Image (tube, rainbow, N blue to C red; front, side):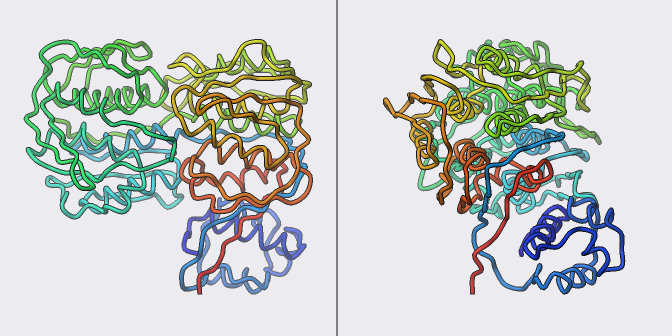
Length: 510
């Protein structure tokens, strides 16, 4: 294997042990340790020496770590599954990448605690490291300490890593303050259709940034200055709003943003910048008033809040497997509309009292989902900017609708390719009819069946396939799950801890 985090190694050990038909107690006896120690190892809560890894590998007859490369990661899912117990929601992927980009504004030390160890984060860290930023993970792998140099080596940027993430577009807002001229590679990410970057360009012109798209790169010329008037965003996009906030943060004076996104990752970015001395009014609304500062050089520690999209994924896992499961640390304010729709569809669930996330602002609850007989909603389901149904949560309603009695119309008006991706559920037994590139009709209920499928190049539809496989009778294989690892940290292992049967394996390259 090439990934050597404790969680990844623990997952391999667990899968190899199960493959041998061995219990944790039996492995512990061979190694002369306790069952609780094996449990800690398999859950990634125990740092291991190479000697111990080799001892475990010998006991299991498995080469856990070997030289050379490995091929794509695949998942073998055996179902149907009943989940039980409780599972925690991890921190937000979209907040993490925004905070990583915003760390470029700070000449002090930025510590991000509890940040998700996912591929999207890894790509941004690779880009930051390549341009001279020191990025150091704590021993337990949960905290990332970021220190930027006085001068960034933009000419040394890891172009391959940059092109594998759309988040690179959020370097524009910070970098316009430091360089008169620079370039960025074209943004990549999920294949969801034509997502223009023109809203970013229109917005950043107000701050003195001109961008020309040439052969594979954005050529940027900056004459940073305060906007002459309040800015009205033509698109209430998350990354567009974040770019505007970062651009405004290092310009003394006041910037007013109207039609701004008030989504969860935008709020986390605002709370973070407030700790760095930037004054921001209107957080959680569509009008932000930002009073920037001349420079930022502070040591700051910040914990991004939990991910509402992951929370919706886990709620969907409970629904599709007809299970009772508690999803802890759910950011309720970003799921209230989704839960209201689910209640109208007949979902039996309860919500705990609210408590605060570590960022001191976001409201969390524990949601317990119970087996329910669902019916299709009367009205269509479609996304809207916060506080409506989150665009990234919409695909999960496709899987949920497949469980429900009746006909559900889902309108994904934002992305033209994602509705098409949702027809992949038909391979698992669903009845999804594509009306046009934006609309599908889902007829339920579904008798899920196992199948082998290549992962689509879009994060949420890929996870929807994985969740449906949990309910499918037999053994399914989901091939090349890199796109899932972009947005979810160790999802297979965490689902296994609440009753799933997912085996992670690779094609080895000779």
